[in-house]
Amino acid sequence: MEKKRKSGSFPRGKRLGLKGTRTKRGRSGQDAELETLMRLRDDQIDTSDIPEVSDWSGAVVGKFYRPIKDPVTLRIDRDVLAWLKSAGPRYQTRINALLRTAMSAEQSRKR
Image 1 (cartoon, rainbow, N blue to C red):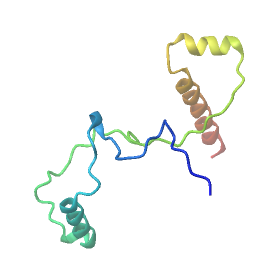
Image 2: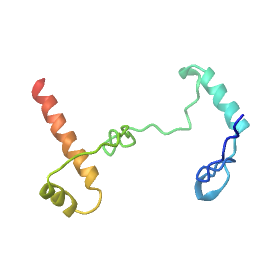
Image 3: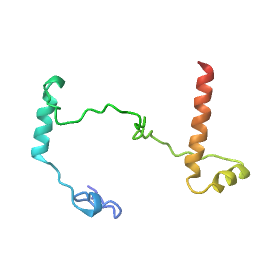
């Protein structure tokens, strides 16, 4: 039976959290509290210590939504690529935004 080699780039062991600290595998007190809350119906949970939000004018829709991205190879005219890169880094993000705008406009026309 062949022995598996350990990868140098993915050492096994405990995962490191923020700032290199070791993460705790289980927080039994917090886990138990969450389990208890999950078993309750919504009207049984006391939310009196949470202030009600009445002004949503500063809310941003989809702020934390991150669609899954796929790497692709794309052939673009040299002058178009130069124009995209001239605005600074993150030109691939700009390409995605331009394509999303075109997609949304086309979907709006079809409706």
